[in-house]
Image (cartoon, rainbow, N blue to C red; front, side, top):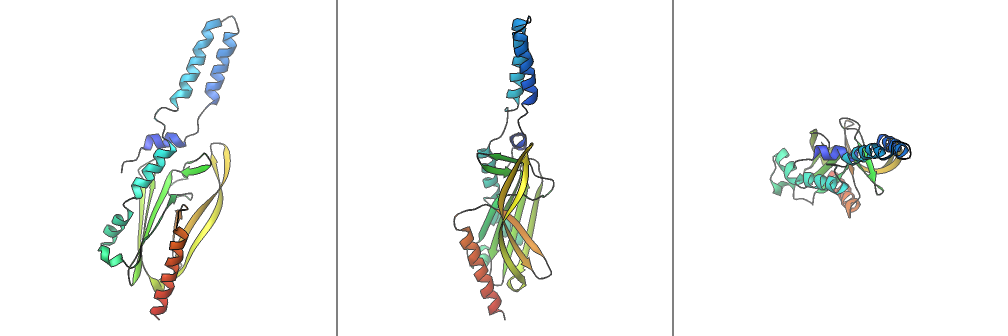
Length: 226
């Protein structure tokens, strides 16, 4: 998957309208003065400066498509990472959790709200695979505006899992100077020794039911091992 870094950066960058507006205003004043038609020159410059900001600018649809393509092979990535055969992790269907990441990964992610839906420049793709003895947690995080990527691959025995949590959290983000209060979902597995494996995810059909099934499976495995 090749990301369109330049177009994505432009998507998140707020449109600068103050300078073009000021130049256009000068042109309007000139049109109504002795300068006359020469006032069209700054107006045209203002239109050019404003229009150039849209040249090569990405879209929300393109951003979502890049994310979907980047995580569509998540299961294969995880199986290769853990050096598994697919039959080893066919105990139950895997759980897949995807979503734009709010929390810092490398740097504060870029942020934008469009049509009431927020997006950031960082994305998480997480899959959890299940065998008879343990689960395999694989998380692939990446930036949409530069070449930074990160992987977390962890094998967890059922007896080592202390809790599985989902939360609806709130935070404040800024798109330019505009303040937005947003909500987002997090999923976390806590283990003995105080370790925590945490990821962001978006709402999707059946995801809460899948997570509830995972909790039940872990409880059953822990009881059978006693």
